[in-house]
Length: 482
Figure 1 (tube, rainbow, N blue to C red):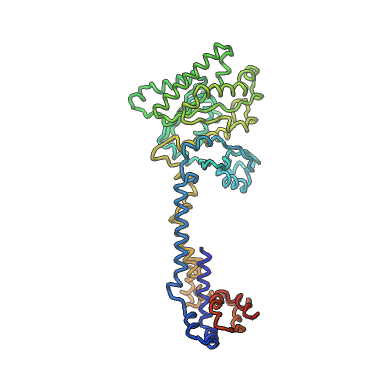
Figure 2 (tube, rainbow, N blue to C red):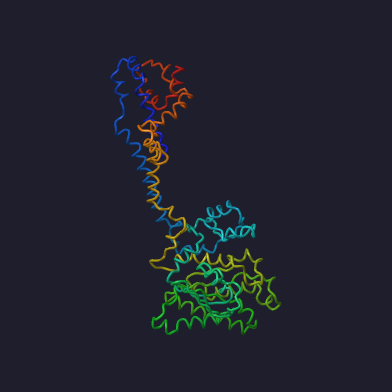
């Protein structure tokens, strides 16, 4: 559309020389019906000159407005919250290798996977290649993407999130704390007890962790949560989200007899009932399925015998059969983001921080439908730092700048006209210098000689005459052949 505007403007300016040349006179003398030709060669009206720019401007405005409306209303747009139907696909991400020091690779994963590098530029010298969690493009209509720490902090503002479970849940708790601004969360700290509860406050946001290594401990923690005086009398806000995970250490600390196996099933049944009760209290609940176990990295024969990946996989199936996964709002599938990184598990159970950060990203995408309310504003804060570039009003302003530059022949929005203050007159105006700049080009292309050899043979060339006005050089060669 901008090309049409520029073309029309150039035609209007260069057509002045043609209209004042001797060609119309020669055409008039060579025609019998001079009045008809003169009528066709009369200058265009103001409406005819202004209609192409106006139509082009309206077209650009309509296209921009349509694009913006589609981006706001479409579910596949990164500016729109994800729906609950996306829960079936949010765990289906992949790990992709990326060159940490390559700007091209960072741009590629951002464009193709809507992800971003977890590593700062200072780490470029320490790492040459790393793995990045991302979501491939699918036909599900769900636009999963990386959520920045600014987005997470805004989303959880004024919220209370509770984690209940074992060491894997605790690692996920530390990952959330890092996104909330505590970059040292999960690091070595001798002042902290490893097997204890923890509470962190980030402004108006409260993140809690309840230590519960066994499934029966999780049942007890949920009962305490429901029966506290604060919750019963409403003096303390109930959690906005509860994430629960357990089961791995049940295999280690419980015997393998049939009686103990039945006892374990009874505990899982009770856990299912407690999770269902939280759901009935309208508290969004997430079940964290145990991550993949690196059997070879387990540091004892007892663990390799009872906590191997085959045993844990059987345990996952038992939990699913007894209704644990169907009793919660969302299932964070641990194996989905750990099975490709199982070799990185240094003790067979725990993983590096970036792996748990991937689990956090899955959870952050799921928060679009897990946490309701007027402040469900993940979409409005997409890429918070550069989001101002998506402002439609600023886009229209830039469009106005471009149009003014086209009509006034000045790419500096009027600055070039300041030279007239010092020189005087209009001889140095960009609109005047345009002819001086392009005349040598027209002369070199022999456009100024196009009228010399034209010969009009009949009165039936009126239709061709109109095309000659816009394409003088092409028409010149055609007339010469005649």
